[in-house]
Image (cartoon, rainbow, N blue to C red; front, side, top):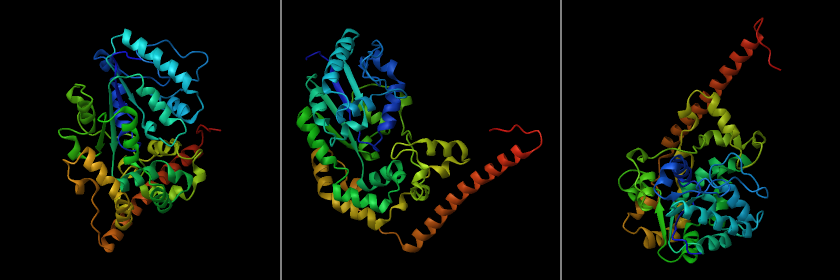
Amino acid sequence: MRNGIELVLHPGHGKCGSTSIQVDVYKRRAELEERGVFLPDANFRVGAEPGPLASERAYPGQFYPIWYLEDLMCGHVPLSHFERRLDQALEHAADRGCRRLLISSENLSNLVYAYALELHRLIASRFEQSKIFYYVRRQDDWILSSWQQWHHKAGVTLEAWVDHCIEQRTPDFLATANSFEDVYGSGSVSVVPLHGSAFGAGGLLPDFYRRADIEMADDSRGDPISNQAVNPYLCDILARIPSVFESQHHDMEVAARLARHVSSADLLFRRHGEFMNDAVRNRILDHFAPANRELHRRYFDHLDFGALFGRVPTVAESSRTATEIEAIKEILAIQMDLLMKLMKSSEDQARPGALKIA
């Protein structure tokens, strides 16, 4: 199909600023449509299309099509369904003045799914022009962040997760970029390191809009913090009692409950990059160095490689120990805060005439 609509695809990667981009573009959905840039909803409908067909599964609680796309890539929904859905969406969008279709979903970089590449080929076949913006970050930071976000919930230690990632070459940014080039065409893919030196003026959002050639107001400037990870020292404690999570990986209720009750969000979400020690970081960086150098050569050789993927200097053990002691004190402060609130609530409930809640 040749419809005159350009594809702007942001396929993640997960833990590389994807949530920040998605929250902002969908917040501005009406403004973007006025500029001819349309975004699909959870059921991949655009521009106020009619509601889901009776034969379609609903995807409640989502504003973008992450779970629909995952169902397609895993084979739970046939690609023929998406082929019809995409053609209908593009026809409707073209009638409403759409010039670009902007698709943002971090799981589109998960090419290990059985039908992931077929889905990308189907998307690519509908557009004459495509721009792919693929954001990446240092693998040591990514591994720590992904452990905080997902894998500690399954009782996996950081050490075990590091070993798994090295053995499986995860995340393999270079292989993913190669696949995107194969599907969408040479020169269609921009690989962007998640680093201030790559952004120019402003932060991640201005960089994304600038690369997509979308003029936005100045209030989109800056580096928003979305999808924050819980303090890694607290994650380490929670990993020892994984039964606290109702489901592995995607259970966000524990973090939400803590955020509702802990007085200091700063303590709860403090980053603590030193939680992963220097030797482990350098082991990871050394392992991925050849692929990182190839990414650097092909996509952003005007930037300083050392600043992006360089090994980290070793910190004295005494300094690290002092930092860890302070971090443990933070976790004790969180626990004491929760304990005091629990005691107060219990005392309030025990007072004569207090309302008893079953």
